[in-house]
Image 1 (cartoon, helix red, strand yellow):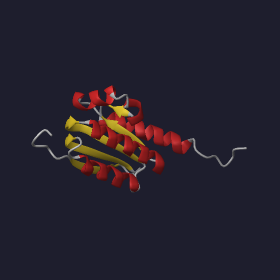
Image 2: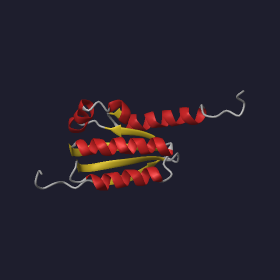
Image 3: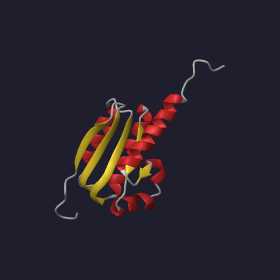
Image 4: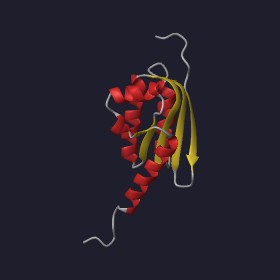
Length: 136
């Protein structure tokens, strides 16, 4: 145990009117304090979000439990049909993700703007190229 732990806080905001939600995590994200983050992410995914961007730009320490929560949230997003992306511009977050080879699974981006553009592009492609009434 590392002694005093910065408890994470999660700020959730809807971006636009297309159901895209950004959950920004602030503070440490590890085994000692992952429950709050997990609960916030699942609340977003169990709601009406068409896409969830998890912004980790303000995370100080990022441990293996943080990665586990993100993988679980990505799996939940797949189940509910929501797009998913992670912002990991800081080395303290990007490096553990890279080392565990989960960058592609988590759809990692360097900035929130990049992640928002990516989920909207994938969402648009999904809704535009989905079921066609005229298919044979």
